[in-house]
Amino acid sequence: MSTRAPMLGRFRHGYVAPAVLLVAGLLYAPFLWTAYLSFTRYDGLEPAQWIGGHNFAKLLEDPALLTSIRNTLIWVAGTMVLPVGLGLLVAVLSYDIRGGAWFRVPFLLPYALSGAGLAMVWSPILSHDGIANRLLGVDTAFLQEEPVNTVAMLLVWTWQQLGVNMLLFVVGLQSIPKAPIEAARLDGAGSWALFRFVIWPLMRPLTAVVVGLALVASLKTFDIVWVLTQGGPGRNSETLAVTMYKETFVASDYGYGSAVAVMLTVVTGLASYLYLKRQVAR
Image 1 (tube, rainbow, N blue to C red):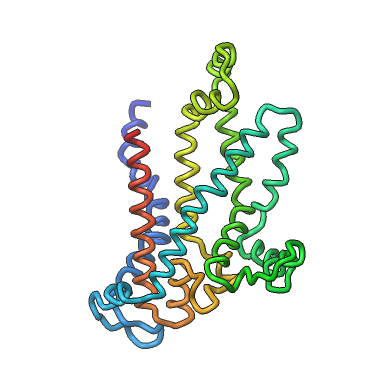
Image 2: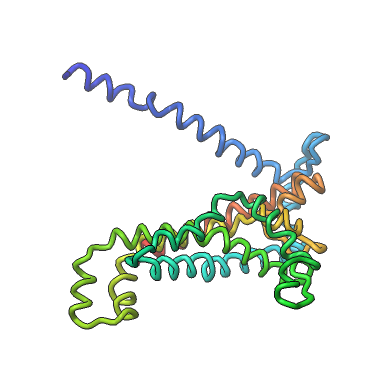
């Protein structure tokens, strides 16, 4: 036993080396290559030409990018209010009631669909001559008018994401000790006071995780927007992820598309860092 322990310690780095190399090859190497391309002019055919910070200077002058940033911020704000907020509401209302698990099932089913599949389901509903206009008795171009199209797609996103947020909040509710809740009830706390002063503070660590995951997911929104509108009409419903895709793979401007990708990575990383730092401080 005494001989084996030093052997395990001596080769401990070798045990994790395959996983580290795999992560480096699949995550870090592509990002470094993308960062390099962001300083070049590259169309995927001719050799890349180094042009310095020209692509990033172009970002600051691109009106389409400002639209993408605005729409992305709408997605972030809407995600905090709708999928996260409604998920918490459904979790609280269905918790600790008879048949609550069956009540939650319909909210979970849409999460089984991919974003692209979800968009295919909603496309005929939101089209100009679709089901939504007929049921509501209106004549609204849900996917053509700005910013109605972004709001409509955000509602589709909510329909998919609400279930998983609800499930996470239910897990958090089930992990809360019963004693504080029973003590608050004995002291005469009503439903709102019980939630505000007992349940919500105890769920704060889990809420930080749910909001953090939702924040990152909303910043990277792509599939629903691409299938429903492809960022149009024109470019008025693009998000940063859609702009990156169109510049790279549609316009074949890999250098500029890589600059957008680097900016999106930096924004996502910075937002996640600031959010987690604030939560740790609290």
